[in-house]
Image (cartoon, rainbow, N blue to C red):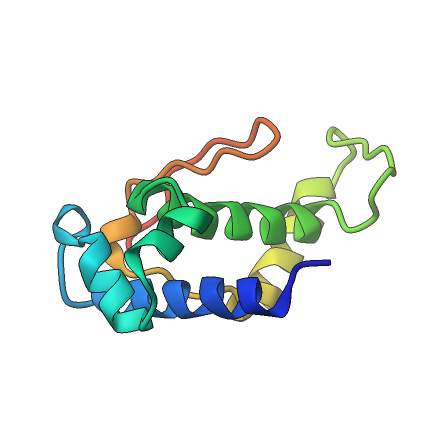
Length: 125
């Protein structure tokens, strides 16, 4: 279980990133902006993330995890992906649940999702 202070810090950084990403292009965002907005020390940022890219990838990881849970809801189950209707059913479930995803701002549109072999470009939001 993650320490509550760690959870609060990561939540503050993620919220700060969402806010700043709406105002600045991705490559113009600085650690100082993030830490000032999140009201944390720069050293604390680096305790949790190696870089701004690392923080941004945490969003991609979250989306990949949610997508995989929607497409393959029962862990450990073998799915026949060639079975008629398999992808239709899975993608229908995905679009029904799509509003539960946290929207990403456009500066993240080029981040690739890397999770268990899944690799895709994020669409513009």
